[in-house]
Image (cartoon, rainbow, N blue to C red; front, side):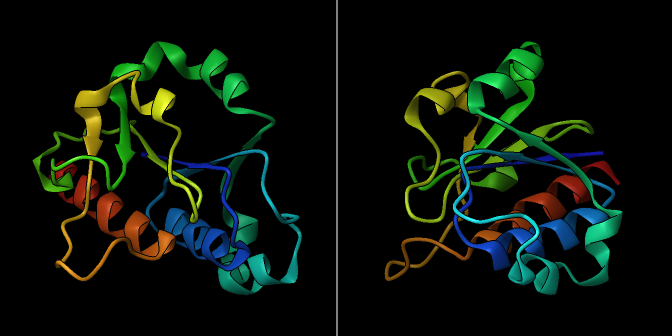
Length: 150
């Protein structure tokens, strides 16, 4: 099982789609507050469809709370970011890893990625693109992690 960690997600439809991806990959979804919407919002449920009730979900009050509980696993934290040149397919993912994705408008906190800068990964894009939709990015990285461990 992989762990998807959303740090301060901002768009409920993305979170709903990511929940659906997690159900279909037997992954756990960790959502770290603050978030700008209520998880019971119709948009989350609509995007997650009937999968949402099957989701293995853990909501954390803060990044500090999450790290207090999981900091001992930091060697297996991977950070999706545009601030590195290392493509995600060069990472060596293992079952149980934590794949972090940041807020749609600002990404992950630099201090978080500083815990394991060698585990920062990016999705290569053409010269005209700067980022992908969050749920698309989660799907790309998670399915490669699954491929590596299948």
